[in-house]
Length: 407
Image (cartoon, rainbow, N blue to C red; front, top):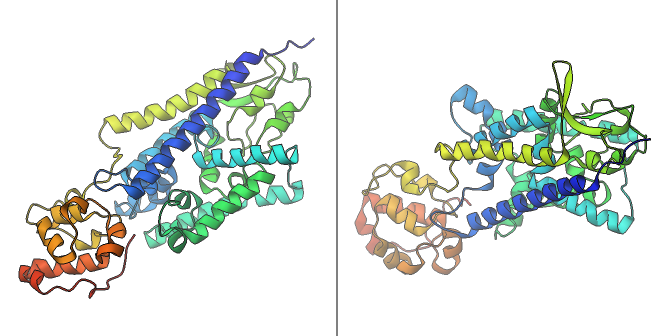
């Protein structure tokens, strides 16, 4: 008779997974809001904290030695941490860390409460549809590497999520908001809807996961064929018929293992030198996340991983006279204090021209523009004119320059 698997470790593994996913979602959401609202010292933007950004810029980095605009070295390092984790624990980033994946699981939980069960697409439609994410992956990489810019950014649901508090949300990320809404609405009916059918990062990690060290392995001798593992899988992998789960769709969430009622019938293990080394569900839950975190912390400790945005002066290397300052870097999220520091223009000049008191010059231009008429394009034009002739301060009329806005 099959020995019943103890319930406590399985419950702890699921609890650890959900706590980590929730913590990551709260953390990155807070960073996104802070990036939108804060001035000097604000966190880097979503593009610099997304491992897929590292993949998007990989082509230009290898062939041209430069990063695509908006992408930072931190994205490349996150890509390395994600790939490093995948080599050991398959798509653990997808199943145990990714905040967009967690949002979809929350939507799926709501859906099961309402519908009463998981729904799946007919196999004849489901399997071909899953190939779409590989098409999306290839298209994004080709377009980005060809244009050397983030051409897909306005359509990215995760970028849209991180701009939900932005005044320019629908003007700049309307399509991305629609994709996000479809992903969450679809997940109410079909678990992990975006992950299964459109996520380019999932497609990339799925290719790597075939070579991962640890995989879910089934012991056919002790398996009672209850198929609880199949019903627990959020991405519809047929665990009950596999000896070793090699399906690239597996997100290494461990839900199948924690659902298995038989001791030893299903476990995550690595096969080396003819023997299989198995890890308990709690060890996998902690180990995969700890590996990812350790790689990120190592990059941070080395000084290579920047969590905050450089000031304009740091970005251009300009001195107090602003000689090397590039006005093209002035955008909506730039503060007037940053412009003053980088361009070498005294704060009282901006007070005199635009009426912005020194106490408010730490505010972003996109916030100040409606009250004081100091839009990014307007300020760029004024700075250029002032650097040519400081006497222009006596004749400058705010609102006469209408350069292209940058958010």
